[in-house]
Length: 79
Length: 373
Image (cartoon, rainbow over all chains, first blue to last red; front, side, top):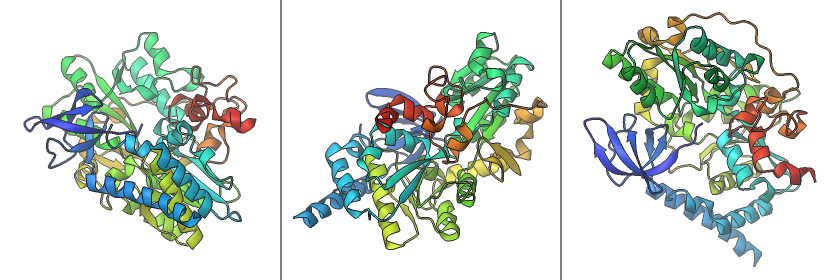
């Protein structure tokens, strides 16, 4: 129920507070009523037809870096 | 897809599994409750439990809105459609949940009631606009993730003067459920060493509302994303907190969750809803301040006030262990009905109906078979 999917905004209609998003090759119309400052190219979390939040590219990269580092530390310990 | 594929990387998963195995101390028990059904689903789909050392066990929490909805509320929804003759719109998850006498919305629809499965609250509004002669009720359920879209629909209906639209509100709140689980831990409940905190609920409410878990109950929390690497990294973060004797709220899912959450959505929810004094949760009983109803300003759009209904007594299905499973006290395989008369094709209890339910997760990925072997 709480599942939300990351999707990229491809078009925004400010008059209706809606956007078109691209979801793994599928285009879908969603509501932007819950967020401010969305721009074309942003990734948003989509849930029941609404964008819940913008995703942070920097934070995603930082999380992946930490995951790699956690694994690598161990490799270092093992040798 | 971006933000999904990279968090399912097998090589990184193996590295994380090795790190957890190396850091988990054999003398300790790591009983980690994943609050959300989304986590349970990820753990089973990707076999995360099998990558963990034997003394690290995931205990499945009550974070599945379909699972915790008491039968009486589905009886009420069925009555709206059959006795009041409304057009009842709801999310697909609810269609097959057994109500009293094993009735479901799907069966009632087959018998002629006007029940519509919708994807978004926007669909319910559209149906109300297209059928001004019909009373259209949106059967709203869900945690904090799903509440703001309902709030938008209510405000839109008010702005448009959509007089034939109303909402049967069953939105519930995560922190009170977490508090109940922690408060009953011990002889009657389950002992927990750490909590994997909600993902998408937290994108809305932020990480602050979980502070009490650490400060009052001394249990560490890591807010965790729903992808397998998210779950594993969060488990490692909990292992580290437990080993170090730390007890903090940490945020693994920082690409979507901040301390404050989505303030615009919070303001909308605060405007449209009020907190109920108490609300019944399947498995947890009546919890104070744990659910939302429409605020008095929006009383005219409240289906509970528009279509009064008195409930008879509801009876749980005999032998169904959903209530104990929802508290983390029992596992699906402890239930006599599991996999015999109760399967996803023919569910007896709510935990088998919803794809996020623990029983459905056990059954769908067949991992209980290897566990039993």
